[in-house]
Length: 188
View (cartoon, helix red, strand yellow):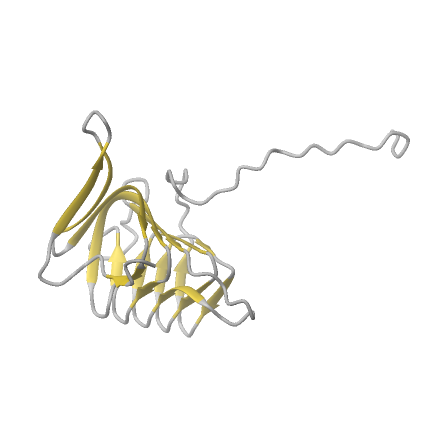
């Protein structure tokens, strides 16, 4: 990882990074104004992502964000598509999909690609290359795809359907396999 660990919600710092197509249209965006994370497109970060502790982040837009390493939300941190992190969230309007690339240990030991620590909330989709962990009293709104899922005491998970996957979300595109009876092995 060339960037080590970064935070997308730095204190006392704002930013707005945009990628434009040849016509000047925004095809990717990552911005922070001190309270709202603006997202769009598919974003690749060669780093771990850490949201720290006791943070409230409301995101606006739809994006798939890849981290080459881990994604961590510290204690009492909320990253949501609504101000109150509640059922008013509409994933057709605001959806953040995390892809955590931390590889599993060669010896099979637990390896958290993404962890959400105690008393925290996330609204969005999670895909991890290795393990996913929720601490005590975590609330997650959205699907999880992981090698192993570890849930500690009093977690609440709302597996909200997200509809059509966002561009850039991991998917498989295998061709449909057709089963053809071997001649002479089946009859009606």
